[in-house]
Amino acid sequence: MGRVYNFSAGPAVLPEEVLKEAAEEMLDYNGTGMSVMEMSHRSKAYETIIKEAEQDLRDLMNIPDNYKVLFLQGGASQQFAMIPMNLMKNKVADFIITGQWAKKAYQEAQIYGKANAIASSADKTFSYIPDCSELPISEDADYVYICENNTIYGTKFKQLPNTKGKTLVADVSSCFLSEPVDVSKYGVIYGGVQKNVGPAGVVIVIIREDLITEDTLPGTPTMLKYKIHAENESLYNTPPAYGIYICGKVFKWLKKLGGLSAMKELNEKKAAILYDFLDQSKLFKGTVVKEDRSLMNVPFITGNDEIDAKFIKEAKAAGFENLKGHRSVGGMRASIYNAMPIKGVEKLVEFMKKFEEENTK
Image (tube, rainbow, N blue to C red; front, side, top):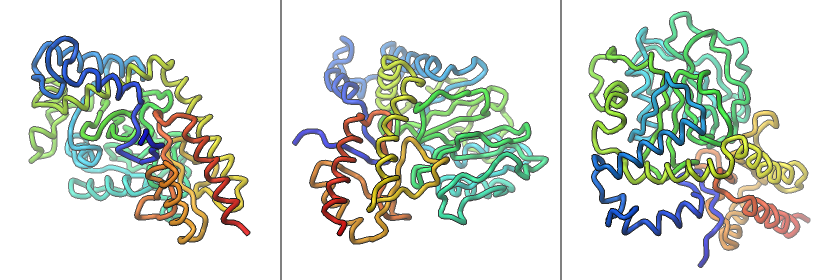
C-alpha cells in the first residue's frame, strides 16, 4: 500500500522529502556511522543539529534577539503549569476560552493563582472567536493567555486581543509556522510540534528574556524553570534529540519553499478549496463562522450521525485517513497542515462530491 492522505490532527502528516531524507540517514548520519537516535546529545554532530535548527527557526519567524528559543519536553500540556510557575508573579492571569486547550490551561493555572476567564465562546460550542478589542483585563494580571488556533473546533484568532499592555502568552501548537508572525507582540509563543512541525515529544517555547527569572513560584521543579533551560541552551538534560533533528529538517524544507509568507499563500489556497466546497454543498457544512475559520483544521458535519459514520468509513477505504472529528464534538475534521499536499485536499473534495451525489435524494 502506498502513502495515504493523512488528515490527522496530530501526530500529523510530515513532508515526504523530510521523511525520505531521515530514512537515508537512519543508519549513518553525515558520516558519523550512527543514527541521530543513537548519538550523544553532547557530541559535536548533535550540537550542530540543534544550533542549526534554532537558527533556521529564528530566520523563519524573524525572532528578535531578546527572545530565547527553547526545545523542551512534556508537550504543550506541560506548559499549562510551567507558564504560571514562571510568570505568575502577582498570582493573577486572564484567559480567553476558545476551546478545550485554553480551558485546560485555565484550569491548570487555578492551581497556582487566580485565573480569570475574561471572554469565552463556549456559548456556541466554540464556533467563533469572541470580540477581544475591549476586554476586562485585570489590573494586576501577569499575562493574558490565548490558544491561537483551536485544533478541535477549527477557529483561529485573526486579530490578537488588546491586552492593554499586559504580556500576551499564546499556544500556537496547531498553527505553528503556517504564516508569518510578529513575535514581538507576544511574551511567550509556544507549541507542541506534533501538528505542523515534527514528531510528538518536543514543545518549542519562544520567550522574551525579561520573563525568564530566578523568581519562580515556590515548589517549582528545576526541570520546569525556563531559566535553567535557557542557560543550558536546551541541553540541561537529554533533550528529545531525534524529534528536534526532524524539526530542523522541516525548518529547512520551509525555507526552501520560500518561508512563511509562501506557506501562508499555499495554506490559504488549500483551505479555500475545502471551504468553498463546504459553502455550496447540499450535504456537508462547516461548523465555524466564516471570519474565524482556521486554515489548519476544518471541522464539518452532515447533520446526521449515521451519514457521518458512513462517510468516515468510506473515506478511509478510499485512502483518506483520520477524518473523524474529535471525540468531544463528533462529525468530521480535516487537518490540512503545511505538509498536506494541495492534491490531498483536491482529492478529498472530489471524494466528498461523489459521496454527496450518492447520499442525497
